[in-house]
Length: 232
Ligand SMILES: NC(=O)c1ccc[n+]([C@@H]2O[C@H](COP(=O)([O-])OP(=O)(O)OC[C@H]3O[C@@H](n4cnc5c(N)ncnc54)[C@H](OP(=O)(O)O)[C@@H]3O)[C@@H](O)[C@H]2O)c1
Image (cartoon, rainbow, N blue to C red):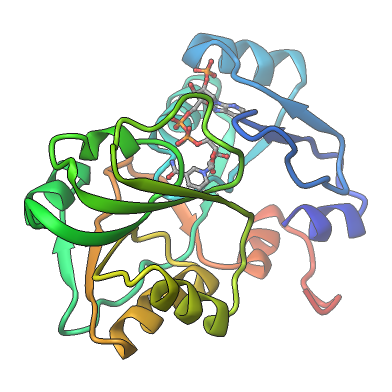
């Protein structure tokens, strides 16, 4: 999205929440960090004379999305979300409504779980300490996870299907827990797990207030009123 805006010379700013130590560089002017809730975002939209907001956050960044809906409504700023469709679930997968739901369906002991949920919410699995947990994060955790049996990997995706399969085999994983992010690359670990006959637990997206949703960059460009003829 940022590349498409930059190629068209759009007057745009890219806003990171600031939760990773070294975020990917963007071809747009970039700011980082929260605004101070909805009032702070409203003040920013006014100060910068923002006319359009594109919510390109992860589907589980529900606070950012809710703030955008509220602030844009208050300031009459046009808003659309660039959001992938959720994965369609394979017949053998276990859907759960939220993180506590994933904890409930895990065995009490003896499972080897790839907890592919990023760095947030990991400690929610502390009530089942007798499983092994494999964690993968972009940055090393600031404090040791509250999981006695765990191994932390650091790395930024996308990861190949071959590497995902090798990882699952190397750690003798029995269960994979993932958020339904919708990215094809992030689905590879679930497809690899399915091919290996492992249990796959998929956490449903949190609710966010109703807003216009675009499924692709060209759709957002059309919404902005820009042509889409440049091969995006
Ligand atoms: N949650 C996930 O599973 C997940 C997965 C992959 C990637 N991510 C990405 O990680 C980042 C943080 O996600 P999160 O779940 O921590 O978000 P979150 O809980 O919804 O919000 C985190 C903080 O971001 C600030 N914020 C709100 N709108 C912002 C904006 N436009 N620009 C910068 N900061 C803003 C807010 O602070 P103020 O109230 O002070 O403004 C809020 O406290 C997002 O970029 C998201 O796309 C999240």
